[in-house]
Length: 335
Image 1 (cartoon, rainbow, N blue to C red):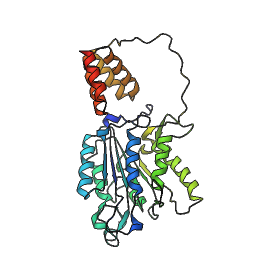
Image 2 (spheres, rainbow, N blue to C red):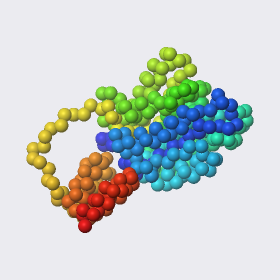
Image 3 (tube, rainbow, N blue to C red):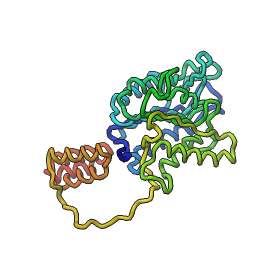
Image 4 (cartoon, rainbow, N blue to C red):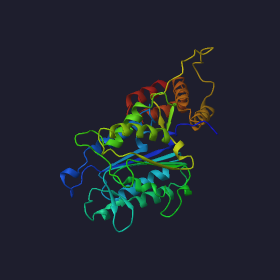
């Protein structure tokens, strides 16, 4: 079995959906922490220490108008993803009384009782993940809402299909199918996502360099079990996976123990031996093997040496991250 590798951030996509304001629900049913969830989770996923998703590969939908806005975004990113597709939802979860045990992800117009029809059925999300994203090797779903464990009944398959129908998927939820999620008043994040952010941003001590879904789940459960000793309302997270879904890599582990650096036997050459297309092929090969930092260093080194193709690639990367002056200076120095 090949060694696990971080999903290629440039070939992966994330869709983060959240609803914090429900105009048809009372003040006690508003979820201001959800907006914080979205903003912080997007920042963490874009962090090079964690995953390093490019800005354009992480779509954030706060207060989506209707189910079409969600499905359109999910379909677009599913068609673009080549490695990993992550879908996250935070908000209220409803159970549609007309469809037994059907989880509904509440949109801004939802209300109780009887307002599940203005929510988005998880069946629709599951359908897109199963069909539109069929060619995407790895799919991860994270649901932070009440009754979210209902999503685990069929994995990512259609109702009545065995969970093993789709290989390489994982569904992580904030609560069991019979429990409500928790968003304590005055807290910055919801209970589940707050714990998740702590693990992704801070890492797991003495863990492996990469965090798979199973490891994240174990750490989440431990953290929330400790909180539940003080507050019995805190629900326990749930995980369902198919194939090797629990082994899907979600992020780097910022807390992993790093081996001591050993000095190289001889200093590395200042200028790479490869140039032009041969260099581009080598950079692509390194990225496909999960050696992103090495590929990044090689391309930067070649750009400094004046390789035109590398200069264009690095300059484009700098502009995507907002460093326009550095990109211009790099191009100017190469001319």
